[in-house]
Image (cartoon, rainbow, N blue to C red):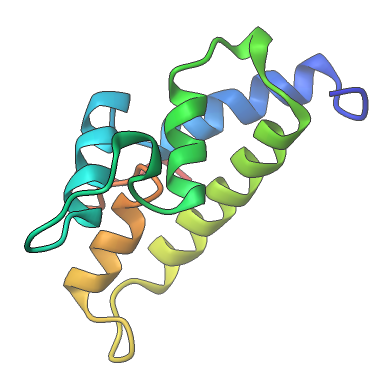
Length: 116
């Protein structure tokens, strides 16, 4: 966190928690559900994508415990959610796929959109 000052971290923390509108419990359950196969289920610590597990870990942290990797991931997730929301569902990414993609990083688009 040496390259990021406290003001930037505060702003990023607030923006991240604004766009990630699922709780850690909801995201953890979604990651386990989305990773489950017909006959098998991933262990909880292996469920979902690496990015989704990273978001889940951040949701369970205090701001003062963030690492440089957490800060990079938070920026990436905020950008991803903002970009996907702006594009919306489209022919190559239909609504269910679009929604599930966003939910995998902690944002359920069926809830109120984050303010711009």
